[in-house]
Length: 397
Image (cartoon, rainbow, N blue to C red; front, side, top):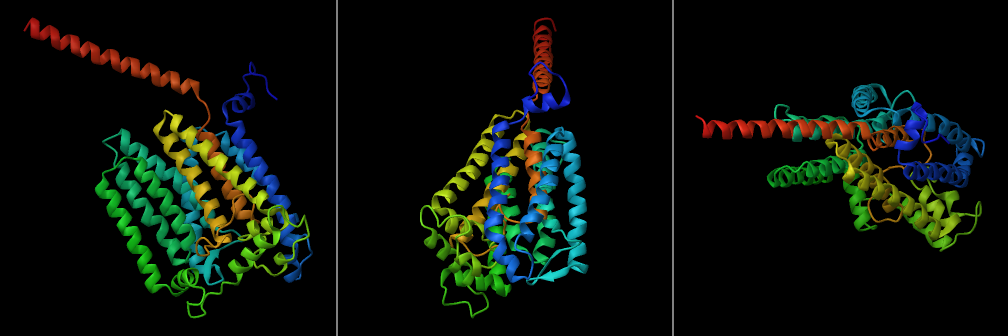
């Protein structure tokens, strides 16, 4: 551990980051590897692969995940914005390439070159939206709010074409939260909220699998057989089978017939083998990260860092909540991973970038605070001098 008196870059980083949040993320990564060992062997066997195929790949992905997260966390806010812009442009290009040349998986074109570019789009989008909203709030000569409004349809349009309504929903909710934080007029809040509701109705009316999923969620006997409820029904059986304390590691049986047990439904595997108590413990870690991140955001003096940290932690928390809600059949299936728990290289690296950005923008920067204070003092003295000059002219015209 670096000493407080040490002035190296590593020591400065260590004493300015949120170490509790870093520890919580580290715990999720370790838990994710353990749960991949529990949930992935049956899936590997069904695919004719070695039992620990996905475990080995997840373990190998952890090293670049940690490296990316730590490297990104060293960035300054200006470097975070530049990195986000580069990632956004590359991810958008890959999404368009996937639409044109990517291979189709379960009716969607989301993958190209072995990666899912929409995963990398999410943290970059949050940073750019936070940048636009913060600039719009402090500079009247910059059309920041207009740019933020344009950014949303430009981002979700290719996602809808894939189609990927889960990521579209997640990005839209986070953008709406940032929009609300920006303090814009209620007319725009209701107007954009109504547009989002209208878009959801259009998706329900004109996209068959969206309508089928909603109908199956509301009434398992409806939907015309387009969408099967086998996954969510089996996931609920996993929780019921495990009870409060589970059957024990490796003793689960329902997971052997549960599709996507190592990705979208790994939370159900946790319930069967480790019990509802373990599920509540994992949920509490996610809640800790979200609440601590929001607390850090509320204390941040820099508008961009405040918007960025709130947006990143909300995206992290909402994605977690959606995955757990789907596993518990509290909402229709969305095909969304549980952060740092579910198997997936693209998901891990993109989450590492997002958390790296979060750590970077929440770092304590006393130097910047001193500069801001000095600038405020200079502005105050300038205003006082103008006031004295105006008063002198009134007395001695």
